[in-house]
Image: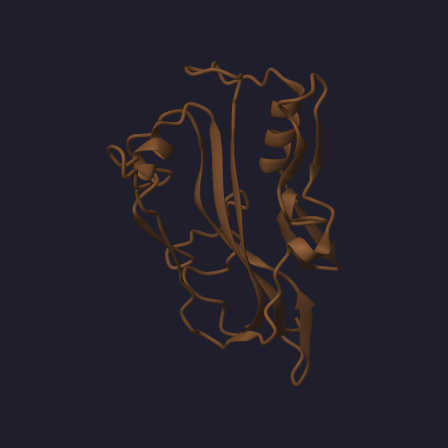
Length: 210
């Protein structure tokens, strides 16, 4: 489809990539937690549950981006409330949390996607939030409903055409002066329940009009 010369479209759209999104003990593969992982650089487009970056490590040639916020979404919660899960969801909290974490949306106008991403980024962007352990019927909502909980940069970070995008995620052991340190990476990979870690850049995306 030919673009409209001299006309650019500006939209509010975040981009994201995933460190891990998996359940059960993991020993190999892309969802294995590591001491350092560079997100966005090797993103593989096509699976919205993992990323919506249009090309590995960069925006496509017609796009620029003003980053007004950097966000992270982290969640650890049971699947079937036990190790060695059969893959089913047992409790109300499990159903709510993993439905939110496993759903994405696309807002399409005419022939173009105008806004897309994980369900947890609308409206609050904080992921599942509520009270679980003190209630047999827990209240879980989609992010804490308070705008001050979301940090916004006072000045945007500009990303121009074909600039490389990287989010360098590092994890360190939890030191214990009274005993051995806890290996955070090993603890993440050995967690029997479900877990997710995503990174976001949020702001204004400018692209050609087709």
